[in-house]
Length: 170
Image (cartoon, rainbow, N blue to C red; front, side, top):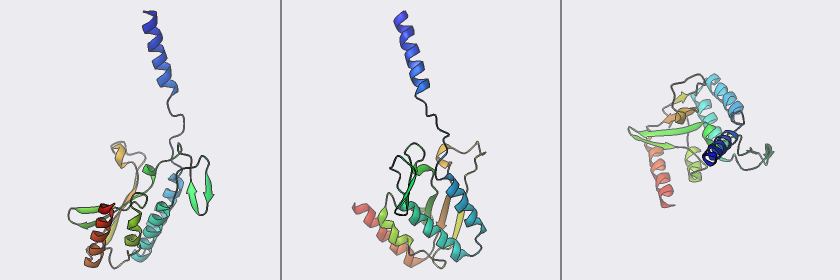
């Protein structure tokens, strides 16, 4: 009986002491909030598209490896425990009724050439899905902001298909 009690106590203390003690706040959160505010205050579609392109490229070159916050060669790096890519703004592109693409340059760096082709003429509209901290009904997967770009441009759709083929050949 003493052994069982000892094991249960050990498990309880082990689990209780192994919990993450940080605030749980992402190091990217202040930058993301400022960027979303800038996006909302931008009036022209051309400027919004350029903001999105710049943010996708910047996030694609952001490194999450080092142990200290630092600004090295124009790339930000953060402590592994303080942040994850899951708190960054997610970008998506819808190019057909039921076809879309996540614009993540970390996973698919070959999409950079496609992203640089975006402009106000080939992006029909954009939707901002902003994360609300007080929204208790959102599932954990939706607890970050995102922007969805929509296109109906034939030339851009051809470039998208080519980019998808490149990704598939890896």
